[in-house]
Length: 193
Image (cartoon, rainbow, N blue to C red; front, side, top):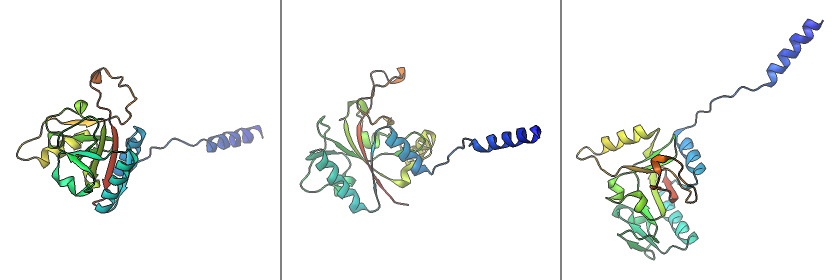
């Protein structure tokens, strides 16, 4: 009888324990999870006109009446009432595109195609990034490969990533000492797949 109780007790205890299971998220879910965890602000858009509307709300929410815009392809998102600048000024947010969105870390990858020759650490603190779902890649390796594939004539320089969206967080890695690239960042993500 004790044997059966022991056997039943053991089987009951084992059935109560739930084993940890790995969760496999889609690239977009994985990216959004890490991006938000790092303090990024994310706005999903299904149509291009939603990008313009959300941009307008971001500017109103922060009392910004101007943007720095280096890419003329993004100018159709900006209303006529908003002043557009082509030079960086510390108090004016930057509206910019990116190379890739890195899913496994929530980072955003840029190159000289967007940043020109300016280091991220020397750019304004406020960023509004426009990206599409087709720019999502699994990891940094795929992002760098994507840059190489998309730039057949000349590989861009100044390749860097924003990896912190919390301006109050101190970088604790000796690799980042004195070179923080933390930004107050909004992401306007357009579904294009």
